[in-house]
Image 1 (tube, helix red, strand yellow):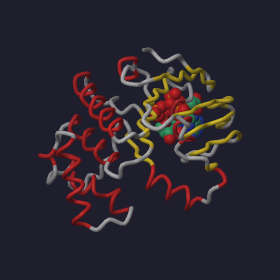
Image 2 (cartoon, rainbow, N blue to C red; image 1 turned 135 degrees about the vertical axis):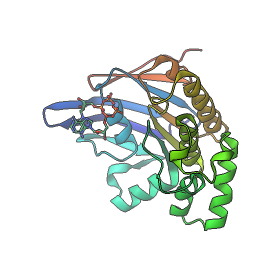
Image 3 (spheres, protein in one colour; image 1 turned 30 degrees about the horizontal axis):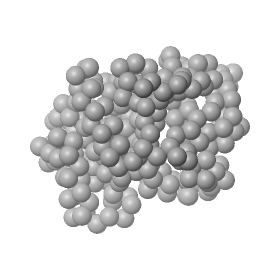
Image 4 (spheres, protein in one colour; image 1 turned 90 degrees about the horizontal axis):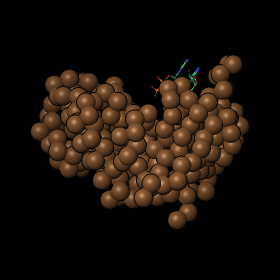
Length: 225
Ligand code: ADP
Ligand code: ADP
């Protein structure tokens, strides 16, 4: 399969810190790739560059054959909204909105009408086993439920690439495993590529392949079969 998203010779510095040093990455549709490495090694910076959130100093990121740096800011935002989904460690649900409204939000941003967006949101909440949170605000549900709602929100637009940065970092191991199973099953069934940042081997175990980052340099590991 042709890669969907690739990065070549990425370099990014923050003042004296070299966050990425000739980093390479490629992912195909339907693949789950774990970006592993110690804290501060450059994992999040790599994810941010791949998602077009951070602009590398050198090197290129290509999505479906198009170079991200050659797009306008508007085109890049549009791409993120329509083709990418995001799950982070915490703090991602809007506290003033119900869980249904939180999940419907990315659809509304893509032009969906309220009723259709809400119905789709409810479908995804049910699918992730948190249908009972629809009318509740995030503050009224548990951390594990909140992370499932966040996964529903990331997948509701049926993104081509799902970016997950330590998606289970705030959960205990049981809830973490449930979220990883739901996330990878849902992504695989829709052929989404999953870029998963984690420092935990048991989270990376859900991936097809690992890329290890150390001092901003990437190293591809052979897939474990
Ligand atoms: P990881 O995700 O592996 O923990 P990061 O990509 O967050 O690593 O960070 C890599 C290095 O770059 C670290 O030394 C970090 O402190 C630094 N860094 C990341 N983002 C910034 C930033 N916005 N400003 C300054 N330094 C940063
Ligand atoms: P993670 O836990 O995923 O490694 P961090 O806590 O390192 O994430 O970073 C969170 C955000 O802060 C990111 O957007 C990153 O770019 C930024 N950041 C990281 N390190 C620094 C830093 N030393 N100075 C400023 N911003 C930073």
